Length: 158
Image (cartoon, rainbow, N blue to C red):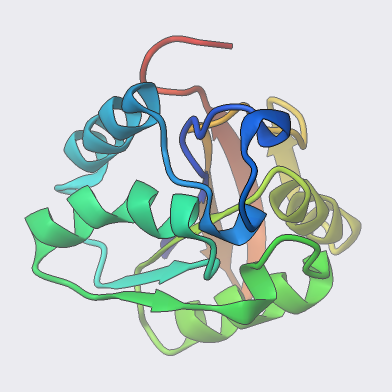
């Protein structure tokens, strides 16, 4: 079983945004990255989409949701500041139910998920951090993440 953990696409500078950070949208660059992510994952057999409730995460998954005819569901464990082990367990529960999941979250949460998985014996290929619009392609075995492979952002930005 596979699952995909995606860091949200480019959303501009946090310091330039004057509103509630949860409402900060994708930039034009980020919108292009979101479309590219959708093209990359359209044939991956994904049947469940979870997102941090932050606008930029939901927007990152919207093109994929449109291609797949799925709804993007909010998942609080993947909100900014979320605990890695809690988010990891939520994703593993979905995988154990036979779901092929893609999740969009943040640059603090996904490394914490990867670190928690590594502590449980997973192999990390490419490190635990992700650039914006990059992802972990994860293999699930025996109800645990067995391997997380970093896939760089679709625009080649590393």
